[in-house]
Image (tube, rainbow, N blue to C red; front, side):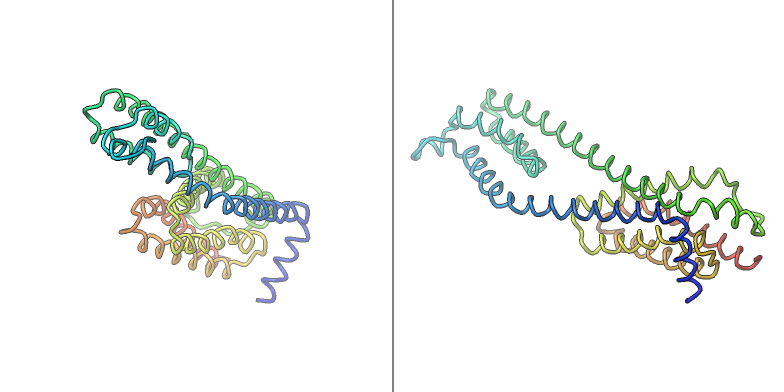
Length: 278
């Protein structure tokens, strides 16, 4: 264990600039998240009240008395339908509500036409939001992967190449391709868990990613074959646990995690053979 820590420290010392860059990136990301989270919390209550006032106006109209509750007040209804499109946080809820109201107001073609336009706009906005959000996750994951590779690439070309290679070891050019695909799938998994706010599964995934990203420092940076084998075994246990836990709750998470798990199981077998041969 002492040798492992000494090797890790030596690696960080050798690649101090890149390691410092990683620390800065993580620190900046954490500070940015805290800032935006604080600002978001300040707006939650106000947005919640405004949205529910708007939905009440949508259903009841902006008139007064019994007639306002029985007869749609077109001006108020149309304004409310239009304004719903600008509550980004509640777009999925607005979409469901408008589809229900569309059926309830089928006899009022004017309102139905306005609702159809609003539904089309909201569906497009939701689609763009998802594309931008998942793109951010993929870029972030690929960037972290690239930075880690920069730290460990020197030993990958020297120490790793000098190891006795297992017969089933893939060619070196295949690893960047495979890991790029794997990290895109993992980014999609993280985005999906964050989108549904499942804290337990998100915690499991966070532990999994910590193990995933740190393995390179242990195997390539510290040259610890046995420690790397133990680490990747823990990684696979976490991956399988996440697949099982999410299978009935969020099956898409399970499906996304299957290819990375197969790859890291292969990596574990490869790591075990390196231990045996070297």
